[in-house]
Length: 355
Image (cartoon, rainbow, N blue to C red; front, side, top):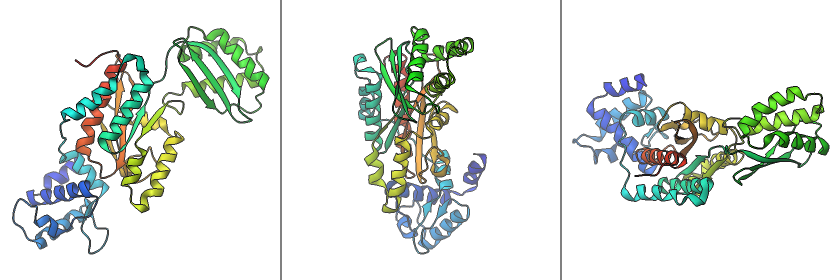
């Protein structure tokens, strides 16, 4: 950060203006910008040759790149990062944008899942990117648990919560499980589940397994331990990820990028590395921006992620909202949308209402 700030500080006004205009042109159009185009928009009268020299200097600094010898310049990933950190102007939310986000609150009867689905739709619509919403875990007490075999390497666990919420989760059971061991595991857990959340059940179950190790056969022990490890893996693949706006990202992709764009959504739909999504947000409050290869969550290169955590009433991070799009995402407009949405979701899940 300090090195990038130093480069900006050492630029003269002309170099800074040329750099800013190249980046802004790229973010608006996605195209390289040439010296002749810049001469028509500069605040001072300068020749195209002078601007070319400035652009060459910026290229030597690693801030601009030229896709072809005779083409204009594009910002590099370093250039975009420096622009976002030091030159970008964040726009204020308009009344219509604020109203659209506020409207996602709906009514209490609609439930958290429906509300978060609406949040994803609005984020995608306002930013023209793909929205990501990581929903919080359901922490109501457990009423009943059932294991159902789906094959040699897959099983389904059905969780019925005391508030009526039902979850179905597929997981990989340990080798050697049988229909009998599934029933035994269900009976074992149901005997201690009622009135406990999953977190409480896991702690209690560990103690029970130690006391009843002789009562369960090895397959049932492994199944119970493996099953709850899947459920309680913080931020893991058992979390629910809501994705909206897939078409927005594909529509903005060049032909050469379509395969990478599809790979991105294959990753999302398989919920691969979802833990990292929350880890990105948990490193600090507020909006975080990941440009290009900084975005380690997805295998798709050339994408950017703007993400912000949301918190419960105890100021504990319980989920996150974000927008993913091309590197020429309109950061100045997306950041306040993501920030305001995360704050609203946090207030709603904490039982507060916007005043």
